[in-house]
Structures are given as C-alpha cells and as structure tokens.
Length: 95
Image (cartoon, rainbow, N blue to C red; front, side, top):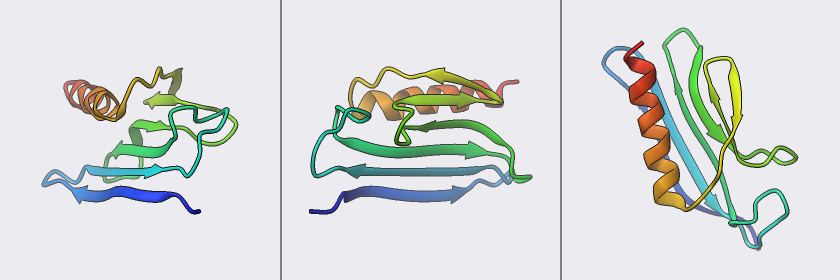
C-alpha cells in the first residue's frame, strides 16, 4: 500500500513569497514517523531562500527550520502542525 496524499498546495503570494504545503498519510507508522504522516511545509522568498520549513525526512524525525537554524518539532496532530507553521510564517514576515 502506498502513502495517501492528503493535500498538496503551492501558492505564490503577491509579494513573491512562496508557500507550499504537502501532507501524506503513510500506510503504517514508523520509528521516524510514529504519527503516521509525512509532510513538508515550506515558506520562502522569491530569491529561493527558505524562511520557514517543517518536515520529517527519514532519519531526522519531526523538525523545523527557521532561517538557517534547525529545531526539533513536537508533532501533536495535523491541525496543530499547520497552525504552528503559519504562526512561524507570520512571525518571519514581521522581521
């Protein structure tokens, strides 16, 4: 059984910033993904710089990138993941 794509959305905002959200439901939970999801949430500028990214690549588990720094992320559920991501996006735009 393959992973099920739950949503994939990419938007280029008026000011050139890029927002991309991708979320899959995995056929089974793994050590790296005990919640059963694989995701990549990205926010960057039009010059290719990543400002905020949440992901859970294999071998690293849940984590987020804010600018050039990487932090562990505690996954609770899908809604909180999306809300936390958008909070960091809003915060990054205030700088």
